Length: 299
Ligand SMILES: *Cc1c(COP(=O)(O)O)cnc(C)c1O
Image (cartoon, rainbow, N blue to C red; front, side):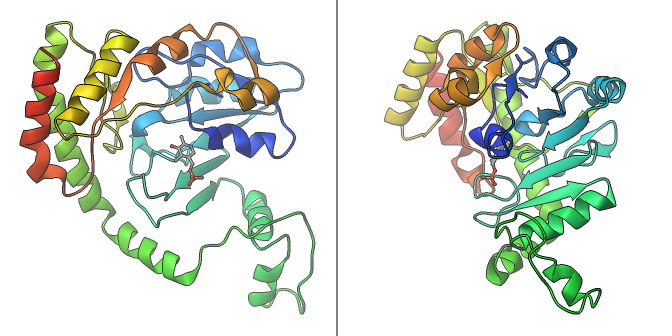
């Protein structure tokens, strides 16, 4: 898995006794560098976990081929990737398992919540048991067994009805939410083109074949100091901008539970220079102010 990701990517595996092996990212998409995966594989490797950062697809053809040749499972952390695609195929549907997040910070939300997509029906059956506290209650409700019982280790992963109802409404609006976000994303992208031309920053890069969902608009500044100044000055002008992630290989729990494969140079460098701009449906009226503030901070 990449080191440049949210902690949940690693926690999911550590909770089940696995050791995450961190791999560096690509300069362009900040996704796992697919050319470094093969050299990290050992006889004990079980899965390749990819993260579609900012809703932009990883190089899945290469990754799926490596997995096939080594008999590995591909798990997609598509937390940021709902409504995005890779050569026409939806993110989250390309590996054996795909996970979406409906956390309040994502595109389609229910406060907290998520979805698991399974390619194979046996995974679906097991997932159904795990999310129902390790019981076969779902089979009972379908009349497939006459009583339900504890059959596996599980927990309570089901959303409540009110959360689910809210989410259903969000999903109905998924197209319009995505379109509204893309409009904001494109406004940022056009605006920052000249700053990129002047060497002030680098804008996100979307490779051919990747259709993205405008999950995030970020800038890569030239140094950690420039980023610090930018965040501070934007704040003084009333615009909150944030950075992420502390690469997991350098975090206390990452050092305790995982290990690195190869250099982490790109992860370390880009994570120090990345800044996220506000992006939410309804932001439009604030856009002139944000862009004006940014141009003042980038002189
Ligand atoms: C948000 C996010 C998660 C966590 O999602 P939860 O719904 O909080 O579990 C995992 N991975 C990535 C890359 C994320 O952005």
